[in-house]
Every structure is written in C-alpha cells, then in structure tokens.
Amino acid sequence: MAHYLKLFLSDVKNADRCRWDDGSKKFVIGRPPQRFNRVRIMGVVIGVAQHMVEIDDGSGTILVQSTVAMTIRLGDLIDCLGELQPLHPRLKCQYVIGNHIYPVQDRNMETLRFLEIIQLYKQCYFSDLPAPTDAMDGVTPLPAVVKATIKRKFTTEGLSDSLTAAAPPAEYFLTVREAECDRFARGLRQLELRANKPPYAIIKASDTVVLNGAFVSKVRAKRTYPSVAHALAAEDPALLLPEGVAPATAASHFRSYISEYEEKAGGVVVLEMGIVPVAELGAEEIGTLIYEQLEAAPAGLTLEELAVACPQLKIQLILDAVTNMQMDGIVYVANLRYLVL
Image (cartoon, rainbow, N blue to C red; front, side, top):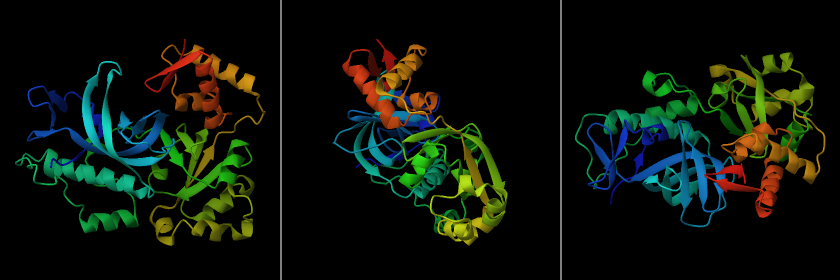
C-alpha cells in the first residue's frame, strides 16, 4: 500500500516544487522524484463548511473534504490522511479528500510534526537517494534524542534557514477557561502569561489570537520576563490573574502549568490583548455591522476575517448572523468566503 507523504502545504501548492504528472496521474516532488497522491497533513482548522474544512499548517492553507460526518470546530488541531486532488475547476484550488481525520489533543504534536517533516525532507524527499518503494512506509521515525529535546525545550535552533525564513502564521489559537474567555471578551482581563516557547515565543504584536475558538483579538504588546516572579512584579494583577486567584497565590497558580525547567530555559511571556467595546448589540445591529463589512470587501470575507473586522462580536454571533443572511438571500458563501449578492 502506498505511503502517505508528510509535506508542508507551501510546497504542495508551489508549482516549482510540486507538479502534476498527467501520465501517471500522480504528483511529483523532491530529488529523487517522489510520486504520490496520498498526503498526511496536520493543521489548525480556520474554516468550516458542510463536509469541508480549511486547515492551516503554518506554511499554507488547503481545503479538506471529509468523507465521514465529524464534529469539527474552528481552532481544532486535526491530523488528516487523504488524497491530494489536482486543481478543481469550480473551487479553483487544490484540495484533499480526507479518508481519515483525527482530532489532536496534544498541541505539542504540531511542533513534533514540523520537525519530523524537516527530517523527512533532508533524509528522504530531497536526499538524492533512491526513492522509497510502496513496500516502505516512507516515514523515518524521529530519533529519541530529538523527541527528548523537544520535550525539554521548544526551539528552532538548528533548522535550516530555507525552512525557517517564512513568516509564522498570523493567527494563533489559545485555550483558557470559559469564564476567562468571557472576561477577555468583556475587557475585564487583558493579559495572558505563558512559558516562552512556541507557539507563544513566536507570537508578536499585531498578530491575531483566537481564544477558545470564540473570541478574536489582536495582540497589542508582548513582554518577556526571566521568571514568573518578575512578570508578577511588573504587571497589573487585576488584568493578569484569573478570577479567584489572589496575588498571594499567583506564583503557585502559574507553576501548575509552567514548569521550573521551562521557566529557567526560556523565561515567560505576557501577551497584552486588545481592548474591545463592551456595548451590547441587537441582532439587527449585528446584521447591519456585518453587512457593511461584506459590502466593503468585493472578494468577500472568511469567518475569521469577519471576526477580526468585528472584534466586539463572538464568532458564534457572526456565524448566526451570516447564516440568517444566507437564508434571506442577502449573502452567499463560496470557497469559505461570504459575499454580498
């Protein structure tokens, strides 16, 4: 059985690196040439439609058509095994038919996969060695020493410049307690403290952060500290601490998810989220606000772009509004983008 190639989406969609061979009806990539249709891609869900999701692996995005009914939400990390399809004449893009889609609970797996693909590029896909046969699984196990290093500290040291030169994705999905997500949405809390390791280490000011797949905010500022104690001394506890955590117990609270090793290895970061309006809007006002944004965008807007354009609205409110406008025949959706009729 043919193996699934683990690739960066930026290369899959780059015609200079990955081409379609009409004779064999397969894609070709690498040195020596690897002929394939099956791919394995891990990424964050950035768009959801009926039987179709859009995922972002940090280097690019692609549509995935699900062959089975699944509950997939924005912000979920999924591992997709499927068949890469040539350019679709109606969708005007490549897409993957997902034969198997698995939710990934451990976000560290995203970094592991990133490093695994780099190793595969060096040792298999662009090694100038004989190509693997179908009897081979095509996946070289990640060395134990690499796995141990990743568990101790996430770094990008040692990665080739050609693979780290690309800018990181502009959107990051973080999880907090539901009550804290609501406090961020109401402007009662504005600071989040995390260990200084990916993805938090590469987030920068002006990037977009999505909390619990519901609240979207721009990062106004990012500050780095050598320890939790330094961060607590410098930041406003009223804007930093979760509800129910007193300043006296703050250090032990953060120690529950930031180890001493992580703290000594890279310190901590504090992300300052943008302040959002707290005014309550009615359904008609929400619809008018969203319609104005869509009317000003001839190419349409995705759900995430609408969330960024309307930071005072939760994604569910936006989704409800555009769904109602679709039913009323005011807007339509194409390629996960909402457009005015």
